[in-house]
Length: 320
Image (cartoon, rainbow, N blue to C red; front, side, top):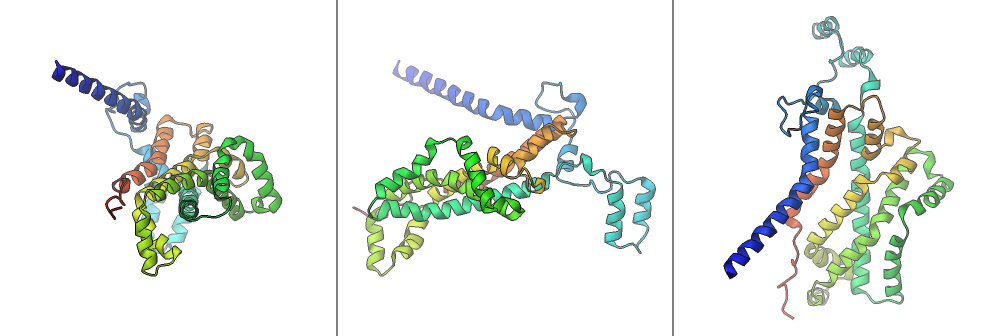
């Protein structure tokens, strides 16, 4: 009876886990399936397309689209005219391209990567210094400052949107593309820094202080101890915080839609997808392909460093 009860509990637990996994992965499977289907198959409920369509991905990634709209006679002329330079051929091709149907996915992708990477890097660097100070140093008002950092999360982003926009506008940062991008990065750092400080601070406290004392006795400074002892032992937590910051900046829409409204060339992917939905390019396979390509970087980043997302790297380093 005991074995049967344990078997039933294990079976129910397995079914529960499989149900949760299915519930989480099914939207991605449906999105991938629809992005690979031709228009005449969009009503087919099957997840496996009868004929794979890669045109949406080729169009978004600008693969093989240069000569797509060029007439055959002009294409033959370009191939059989070695005296024409590459710049001249490109100018001729550009005359036959309709830029109104081209969704600048790669431009939005580069903007999102730049903003998310830089904001995450700055946030993690500041969080490492601040978390070490909170967890190891003793100074007046430490607890007040530490609680004050988390106090920011009592206010929703919509309440801070207009004041932050007015501040950056009065300073003059929103008058240029570089200043606008820098303002958005500052906003993302402010958004992610409190939780980054909290997560890294709690992890730093789990590292035995004896290891740090030994390094200080050997002659290392505080900063040297942080760089050579604390950071190597905390790589798992640092990578976790970096992924958290990257996901927040990568998927953020509200601040980006307001700050970047004057510079369409600086649009990030969330804003680009919104414009794609309401434009004449709103075709289901293109929308789903763009959504899949938007989700890929986060999944690749997580899978690439998942081996580092472990805890207890400092366990056993010293016997207390």
